[in-house]
Structures are given as C-alpha cells and as structure tokens.
Image (cartoon, rainbow, N blue to C red; front, side):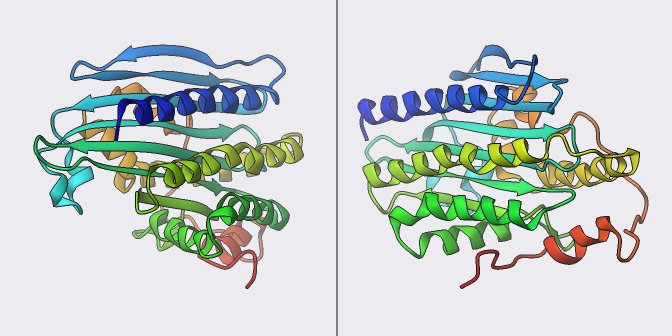
Length: 304
C-alpha cells in the first residue's frame, strides 16, 4: 500500500460525492446541498453536504470523510482482534436520502477504504460498502430495477458476487428485535482485499457508480404520486425503524462515534421527523400490510 493508492481512492471518493449531489439536485427545482468542511482533532476531517426542505427530498446528506487515528475503535476490532493497537486511516462516502413523498423510498449507500498499520508488521487494508432501499409503499418494478442494477454492478466480477453480497445485505440490515428487514436490501460487503488492490478498488467503484443508476429513476417515477395524511403518517412510523437500526446495529454509526468523528455528520443519516406508536399493527389487506406481508423478508427478487 502506497501513497499513490491512497490518493487514487480519495480522489475517486471526492468525485463520487460531487456526482451524486449533482444527480440528486437534478430532481429539485430550487433546493441545493449546503457544504460544511470540518477537521478532526486526532487527524483528518471531511466534507459534509446536506440538502433540506426540498420539494422532493425532505432531508438528505452525502458525506465524505478521511480520518486517521492511533487506535481503531472497538466496532472495527470486535471481530478482528488482530487489528487492535494499530494506527488507521478510514475514508469513504456515506449517504442517506429521506424523501417527502411516501411513495419514494428512503435509500442509503456507502463505500469506504480502511488501512490499519503497525510498525514492523504488514499493512492491513480493505474495502467495504453497498447500498440498500427502504420503501414504505413498495412497487415490485422498482424493487426489481434496484436489484437488477445491483446485479449489474457485480456481474463483471463473477456470477457469484451478487447473490453473495445480496445475502450479506439481507442479513446485515435486519432488525432482530422486530424480526424484519429494514427494507428490500441491495448489496453489502466488507473486509474485501483478497482480490488485490486494483480489482478490489474497481469493485468498490462499480458499487459507488451504480447507486444513482439504481435510485434516480425511482425518484423520477414516484416523486409526483399523490398521497394523503394516512400515507405520510405511515411513512413517519416506518422511519422509526430506520432510527432503531442506525442507533442499535449500524457499524458505521458506531465507528464514527467511537472514533471521535463529527457527530452532526454521523447522525445526518437520521430522518428529520419520525413517529413511534405503541403496538401498532397494519390493518389486514391494507396497502400498509403489503409491506409487512410481501417485502420485509429476505427473498430472491430476480429469480434463479
């Protein structure tokens, strides 16, 4: 691992942030991302971009960060004790988009690169990332498009890659205390280095580059769908599940907070408004019940 590799990844991530922000702004008549640059005391910093109160996007954040430190946080070493007491660099782009319209799904994407070093020992590095979709009133064609695009991102790297990382996504974005998936999944991968730097980096780029291809057509198709207070209330209730996952399970959130990252940038993934209701259940046969009965369970969306 050399400085040229690190610079190459960083330049890609900064450019990816630019491309995603430009694409998302294309659906907004007026609202634009505001940018804030920040520094981290122990080392590094980031570039946070947030779009709020748009006609289409109620709140969304697209963040770049590149931080370094003297010791990896517990969330990174719990399953990999060999990383303890290593200096680290971590860089990535992470985003969450919460639309206004309940018929437009929430989406999340992240691509990242980590390096762990210790004097006298080989450098350990890896890539990770993925993207997942969280609909409230799902359309089968949208879910198929999302997964077809995810498969296209993986296809150049082998026929087994999409089913492997799709399954990992289903297992990772699962709320055990609710016994349901966060949404309809997508891709999730981590600790990727066995292909060597060039191929592993190429895969991370493919995942990052396919996110907008997967999400923007869904926004464009659903953003003007009429809805009532009933659909909005259900959207806000289901957003509560997003909060529960991020605060209880999400390793990225834990890594950021444990490593002394910028709290405002880490928690920009939270929805601006969410509701909880005691022991709420959807009415059998309702549009809301369809989400629970047909979508919040791992399944093979694309067939064999």
